[in-house]
Length: 202
Image 1 (cartoon, rainbow, N blue to C red):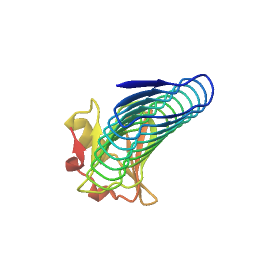
Image 2 (tube, one colour):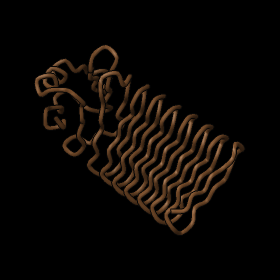
Image 3 (cartoon, one colour):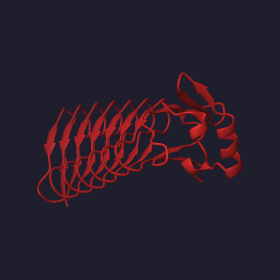
Image 4 (cartoon, rainbow, N blue to C red):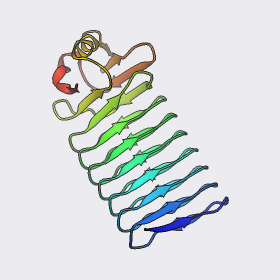
């Protein structure tokens, strides 16, 4: 695996046709993985990462980053900052980290977790899983496909899930779920009668 490292300036770094490790370091960088399965790390700054072809690992680092997986099974993490994550084609894993993030799975059956902060999540096509835990903040699912997509609640029992469903509120066509005082999940365009335990991974 080739290692390509930037400087403290704003870099544009492009991988080879083989598997690469690309590190942007400081500055507002642009990283391109190209072919094969690559590891891209933005570092500090507002970075732009494109995994392109292959099964890639992308991590934004600090700053408000944009990460695009491209084709393949990609693992994408925003880390700190208000990040935008796009899975692209394939079955992708997206994790926002801290900050107000926007996650879009794209094509394929994807796994999305906003993390801390007030996040917006859209799975796109496929059977997607949206994961939440207590303390995540105020999150919004914008394209939940009832009967296809699932919600995973960490450390939540079956009885607790039933209570969450029972206490869900309908607000202007959206369904609002509460996981304690610090976590709210808004599911757009879903009625309370449509939600049951079959929509959860427990």
